Image (cartoon, rainbow, N blue to C red; front, side):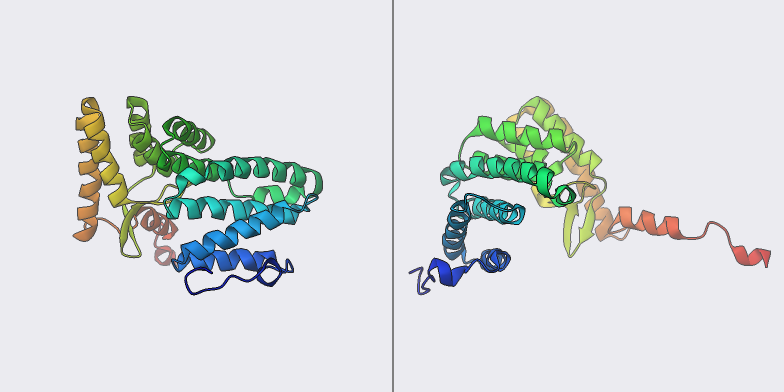
Length: 261
């Protein structure tokens, strides 16, 4: 019994006719804040998938998705110290999936979630569990696979605020482009990695300045640049999305063709 909700047995919960629907249901529970139930369901789902010794490629896809959800739930429930085995299993099953797809369905390889996202997921859990060395290694791996990955650089600077990490973080900020306003929230949107909220970037710059006084002036300078763009958007002096506006401007005709009519 979870609260007032009783959990179905394996067969009733899954049936395994359509495990994709089970994964969707777990995600819905996560989105709805029903994290305890999500954890129980995800645990049972992964156990059930792992019990299948000879898995088809699609089974392996479902298993890996379940393990990722387990990791995300551990982070959301502040149970990172319990996630270490799941992290290792996630990496191991990803490698197994790659081997399966290479052999049986190479056309599916391109649709896999980028590897760097699993290293980012692992790094955040390691950092939350106080495993700073492992976290640093995971964030560095993510950045190597995806140079300029702002979210990895941000978490790397937080977990190990050394000069190289802070400099990589500031470099990733600059590579990400201008501040934008989307859905009522200020953020940075790198082209090849997840968006990051501006407030989180600014707060991390403050943390870096405190941790490394020698770089405090550079951190403050970068913070003021971003805050200046934010104010310019609020005052109508800068487009809410400068990248999108530039793309739209480039679609405008360069000449007034009617003058030749």
